[in-house]
Image (cartoon, rainbow, N blue to C red; front, side, top):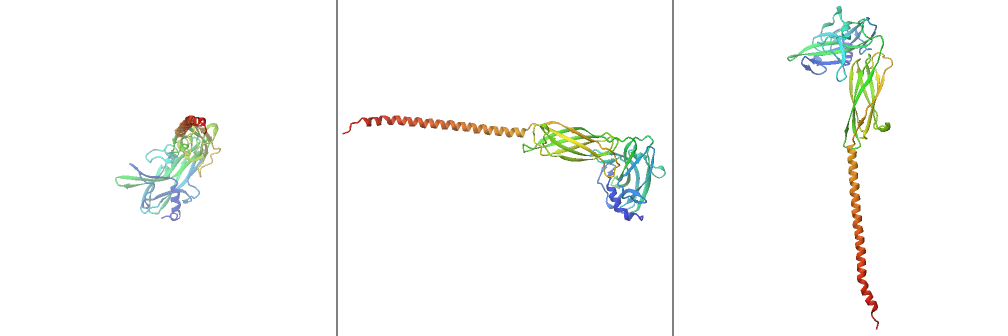
Length: 361
């Protein structure tokens, strides 16, 4: 074990977690880390040890400029490791995460600009358990490289058998090369698709806004989005929903789904999305960052509210008809009792007349 290995073991492991590409099988994928007996780790290096000030490689260069740096690889397991160190290009995966090309895919961008000892595009190392090694490398920016961010990663890969297949365990550190020139940070909201799902509560529901974002510039950018549903005359119908968007590389697109609960089905719904671009910690300054806003319109038939109104209307109509029927019955009873009283009065009238005309002895 080298003198730096025992001191840097935990730092290496922590730095490697920043970008772990996982266990890649030739026929599939498994978990993110192998067991301790198969562990590998890597980190930016300086002066033969871990560079604690960096979590990524970030360079700002002129076209045609060359930069020299170091990469520290450690065998954190308990068995001898044969590993390969190489660089490749980065891209955003479908879920938006930072990803690197598979080992069999040729790099055409920043990954291709990296070379190792003797100009080789990769290095083979054999490390004893607990041992580490510093790997010098050079980044040679082409003279015709366009301005802006070019992303990649430096990978340490270890192949090990797993049954009838081989497992490629890859750990990498991000690499960003910013070529000087006209920086054009650009992040736009390309479109918003909306849908509405009612709830049992007729006065509440869930609105879903699917936002399509595009990095139209030449700088890697993250973003903060704020969404609010508004109604007629801009009346707020929901609170503010904040969603953070992880870094998008230049030219990449991202679909972000935002769910807003507690929105009433008030016929006209207008989700409003505002976006403010940011840069991730450790990234180079991108200057003035862009902002964007966009609205969408959604018309919702308030079936639940209509049903409630219908039931209320039916209840009112039934009550009205019942009151009318009761009133009719009451009126008929009054008329009956009055008629009965008149009839009895007429029947009693002759008897009183006769008794009044009889002589008194």
